[in-house]
Image (tube, rainbow, N blue to C red):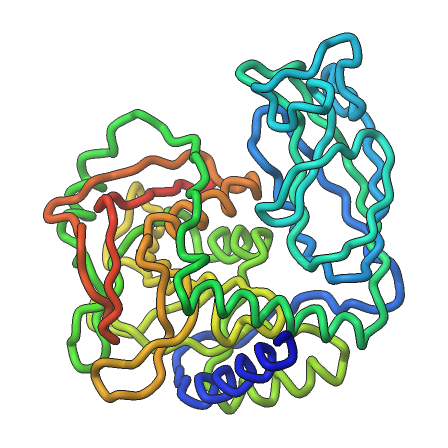
Length: 389
């Protein structure tokens, strides 16, 4: 069954890869680091004021992770408050309050403490948090050093293919389309009236080359191009390749260099009568063909207090479906597009590059619609407006 699923995924992935076409994205400037026999070391800070902190590490079966944690600012100990009793209200009821805990993807949390070593049996992304209930047991940060020793290359490839196939099945057959959106810390202050007026005058949806209405506008970023791209880079979003031809060459080169290819081209869509200025995406190795977070960004024809305004449309590809325009293979998106909007917001918030963010409900909000290929989606209609530092 496992081999059959991987083979089916590969056949459909190649078909979709060949169907992709994109011509307007800027040259690629950043690449994901290669996984090699040398340990990967990452230092992160887990704050008591946050929900789960993304380690940005995609682990494969057989990887060994050494975790060493030390108290940061304040009084939180990675081992927790041992004099306090565990409580059902805690994130992990069996662990001391204030202790460092972790999970793989949306799996069951488990205790880490000050020092621990994990051998990964199922691939996934590592998340960490300080164990808390209704009230935090302490208020501070914990400094965490992660050292990952990779599994052998053959085991890595099998693990990534298997995970990619699982990702595709979850999205394709509806078992993984419901995501819990992160709870964002948004400002309650009303949006500046001039900015609100400009956003009210912005089209609610983008179009394809045939003027078919498509994805909705669901986020806005205010700041210079340099700050925009820097924040996205820190948040591990990558520029999509410009065309299928470029993608094929990039994929071959990066495979030869033992790197993971994650920059599939994306189709060209239009806003303000022109193609997107940037196309960014996040994806795991191999599953990028079928499943990826991605967004298109346009520079607005107006500014706010002299700052550049960027208009974005973000969606989450979860599989394949028939393109209603021409009968070919197209990407299927998660219909709950607000989850992708908030995913982008949470990613950028965690970089520390966002000064504030707020929701804005524009005139004539989009509630129910279909994208240019015919896929349906729904939204609360709000746009997430982010102000960079």
